[in-house]
Image (cartoon, rainbow, N blue to C red):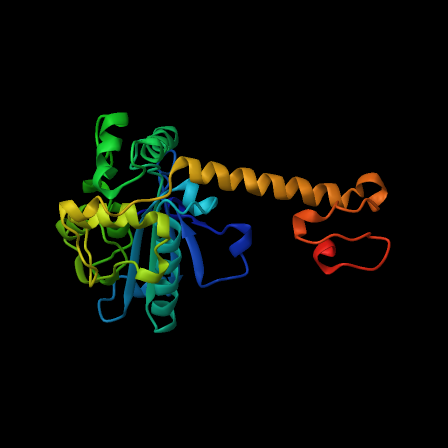
Amino acid sequence: RDLPAADRRLHRPPALATSPPLASRAPLHGRAREQVLIFGDEASIPDTSRPLVVRVHDECNGSDVFGSDICTCRPYLLHGIEECVRAAQAGGAGVIVYNRKEGRALGEVTKFMVYNARKRQAGGDSAQNYFKRTRQIAGVEDMRFQELMPDPLLWLGVRKIDRFISMSDMKYDAVVGAGIEIVTRVDIPEELIPADAKVEIDAKMYAGYYAGDKQVKSWEELNQTVGRKAADDEAAAAAAAAKAAARAAIAGGKNGGREKGLHLSFDHEHDPADAPCLPCEE
C-alpha cells in the first residue's frame, strides 16, 4: 500500500465498469499471475472491526469457464463471491484472489492427462487413487508454492479475515504463517458439491483438508467413493450429439419436412404440415 499511485493502477473490465462496488486489481510486476476482485469498501480491508471475507482461488479453466463437474472449483468460487457480497452489504468487504495456477500449477495439459487416467483406470475414478494418479503422471502431487500466496493480501493491508472460504490446509497455514488472523474457515456446502466431485472432496478431506461438519472417511471407505467412468461420459456425449443431429435435421426440413417418422427422436410421429407441434418448435 506504500507503492506510488501509478503502480497501484485500478483496472475496471468493461463488464464491471457500471458496478463501482466491484473493482479488479493486479500488482504490476511483469506478467500478472494473480487478479484481485474487491467487493464493497476497499478502505475497510485493513480495519479489523469491519467484516472481511476472503477466497484465494486457483484457476481451473475446465470448471470455472466450461462448467466441468469433476471438481468443486466453480461452485466454490461462486459461493465465495456470494459470501463476499454479504460482507460488503454488512459494511465490510470481500476479496477474491484469483491465482493463475492451473492444475495445482502443473498446467492444463497435465491436469487433463490426470483426469483421463483417473477415468480410465480399472474400477473407474475413486477417491482412494485420487492423488496417486497425479503422482504417476506428473511425478508430484502439487507444484504450488503457497508461502508466497498471501502477498496480495498483505499488499492490500489484510490483518484479519473473518471468513476464509477455503478447505485447503496449505493455504490456511500460509495465510496464518504470514501473520494474518483467520477467525472462521468455511467449507463448501454439501449441496454445492457435484456428484462426480465427491471423489475429489473425500480424498482431500482424508489428506487433511478442513472438513467442517462433513464426515472424513477412512482409507477403506475411500474406495467406495467413485465417479463416472470414461465410457459413461462418452456414451452421454454420443447421445447428445445424436440428439443435436436430429434437431438439426428437423430444423432443416429434411425431405421438405413432410416425412412421417422424421420426429421419432421426440417419441412421437406426425406430418409437420398437419398442425403445429410444440416439441418440434422447441
